[in-house]
Length: 142
Image (tube, rainbow, N blue to C red; front, side, top):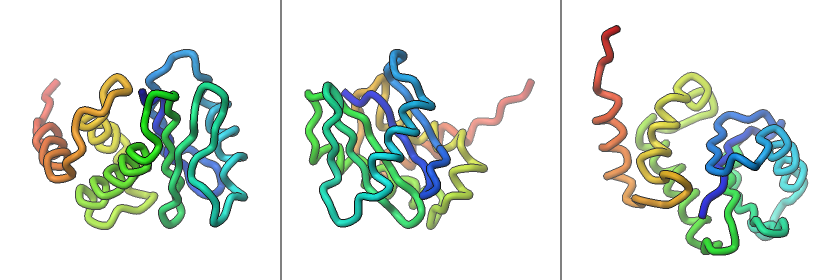
């Protein structure tokens, strides 16, 4: 099961945090995750942390991380990060850090299209993006 999805920049500033476990302290998780991976160049993308494993990838100026339990596949989690990045890239047409900052609601909606409650429900990039575009096309009038 996926416990958390984290996206932060190279200075350690969180851009997106999606927690599926209430017991995990978000600020502590960001700080620990950043400290663990900031100096790791050209090494394995998996870090064991007791009952959890941190799976991460660096794309340009952003770190994409998944905190998973022991039942999740490490390679499938690494592939899921790539699906997330491809989906963001397709949704925002060449995504950058500012897209995540100013469109955080769309990013959370996109994440909800393929992960719910910590379980992966969809991995097809085209399906994820079309579902997200359909959901965000509704206009709410208050």
